[in-house]
Image (cartoon, rainbow, N blue to C red; front, side):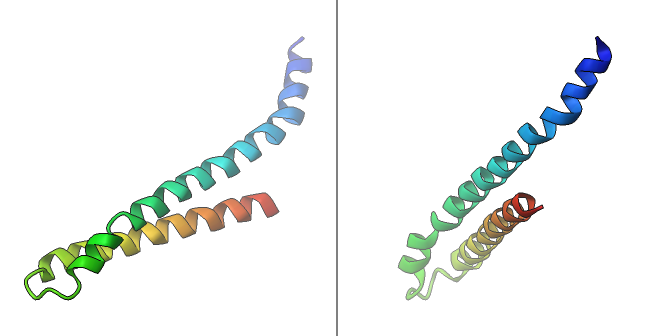
Length: 83
């Protein structure tokens, strides 16, 4: 009985886990891209003002880091799907 269960796990589980792993990376990438797009309006609004340099110093790196995480997550999902 345990040998049959082990054979099932060895043959079926990789075919189930791999698509779930790809989907997980794509969903996380989507959320990071959304987080990167949220401060874009504030950056656009504050760009021409002289007194908002500290805000821009926080908004721009946040958007860049979140976009980087999102892109990396999508690239990782693509790498998993090709392997």
